[in-house]
Every structure is written in structure tokens, then in C-alpha cells.
Length: 159
Image 1: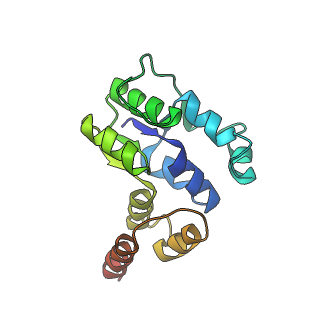
Image 2 (image 1 turned 135 degrees about the horizontal axis):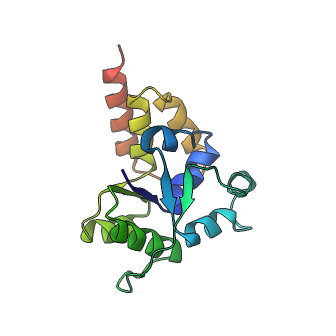
């Protein structure tokens, strides 16, 4: 399964110490050069910059051969969506709402940080309430109703 990621899901998973769920769920994850540059940017948190230098073996940098010039977003989002389209990716990991809409409009399957955490919790790779609590201590923003729904769903599937 080919999975392409934008910057934010990786950033937040590193910040909450759950980046290890990506290879556990997907094997390897592809990122375009702009995403790796954003992770290493001086404005990124030190923890993220340190993690990205060098990235783990399961994170593969791949340059898209063509950029979709109809996408009017940030460079990382444009490259991630273009790469996902080019490779026929099973999924693209993106949090930004405009980027998600652009990816969906191009027929891509989209997942964000919250869905990754939910999948990981279903596979017992992490404790969802704890992970969401850590996420709440970052600058990540999500609708309260969505977070509460995920917590209710998680509680219902626990024995």
C-alpha cells in the first residue's frame, strides 16, 4: 500500500511521541522534498527537526515528476497531493481542511492525524485518550465534537 504524507501528521505524531504508529500501520510512508524541508525548517519544533535529521528508513523521500498547478496551497501540500496522484496512493495523510478538499476533489483517500490515532488505537498500538490528551497540549486544533466522538467510539470498543 502506498501512503503519502504531508507535514502536519508527521509533525504532530513526533510531538506526541507516537510517530512509530506510521510504520506499524503502513509499512513505509512517502514524502516529497518540500515536506522533508518543512520538517527540518528552523521554525519547526526542535524535536521534529531532530527526528527528521536523518529520517528513519521507513520514511522515503520521493519527488513528484509533475506538480498539479491547479492546487493553490503551500508547497508541501501541492507536492504531497501531486505525488499521491502520480503514484495512485492508497491514502494521503493531510490535516489542513483546504488541502483535504483538494485531495478529495482529485479522487484521493484522505486521513489526518486523528484518523491515524484512531486506527492505531483500534490495533492497540496506543491509548487513544492519552494520545489525544498529548495532542491537546500542542497547537493542533480539531472540532471538540469530533474528538469526543472518537473517545466515545474508543470507550465502546474496550472490553
